[in-house]
Image (cartoon, rainbow over all chains, first blue to last red):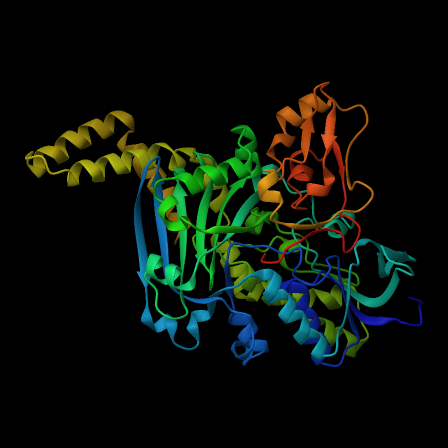
Length: 435
Length: 87
């Protein structure tokens, strides 16, 4: 493309962050181009499960009409896994099954992102697929566009939004982001397994299009720092695990072997039985949280979504909505910058300011110590699940021993394994997972 | 692993997008770090040489994070590589 085809905004990456930015900017009349490296938007994108639609609803109130949503999350369950059992808690709210559905739906990203890309094109943005962006075009120290691996791949624009996902090589080249540390990167692998709709409803206790999210902590990944999950889709289930690259490396555990361990666990095996494997995929998540986030702004450039490190890996497992909010705010600021014809860092820093005021940064800040907490308390993944199981199992074992006697005996035995101080310290630390 | 990867849709490019840098001890690298690849792209042959099956790459970037100094990693050519049908 020649310099005469100058765009107002170039968006690198057709995932939730980039597509949202493009949608907002194109709706406001900007000339927008989205560069996506896959065959179509969504073809390289994977996540657990739940797409949180609070931001989508804001920009497209009627999305439920035709979005490829799998199931409405009415039931969430968290389990502490032991080597051959579990202790669990859950909620199930009928209210979440009614509009606005608590903005939580299972989706399959290959279908969902493709649908969203269609809406972005309808809004007036141009989407070029099969376009890998390797670098920016510099002119007199200012970024004037990007270099895509295409014929005539020099693409010029006033502004660039980098929403190219967790690996975001361009943001790293611009030194907005350092390389991810192995302790700040979670690798997740999952299988999509087909089961008849009726079987999914019966197995997970669901009606109609109700869906369930199950998350498994403790010994779910063979004691590595990680967790497992099952999400119910319409006629498939997503089954996967995630663990920090550091922890899996230290334990010499290949993620697929971790997934096989999880799938064969006596708690999981009956839930996925007789299913037909449809797909195996792997993806990284940025887990550095608030303290390891990317710079959000520089002259002519804003960074959004996973590329900026926006994932809340606490119990809430939110990511797609953080990505979309960052895309929405970056898109808005791009529109304002265009009106002012000022694309400097000072002008675009309105994006960083609005992010600070948004739920994205507030939530990331709240859980900023989480990943370090888990890192420093490895016994949450091995020793504690075992101790807790022993306590609960023994208390519920019916053998004629009086409960008071059981309790005293168990406390005595547990205190041999861990001091009261140790328990309290870990409990206080673990609290950060939720509150 | 082959069974699982055969579920996926791949369109391999002619050239590798993953390279082990010159001078790196492949055995140490693969046994110490790259065994973590979810698609087991990096393996040793009988002679202890590295086999990089880039055509099986799921493009997650884990190898890049675990061995940033020992490998060269880039995205495959646009439109090539894995295409997720579910995701």
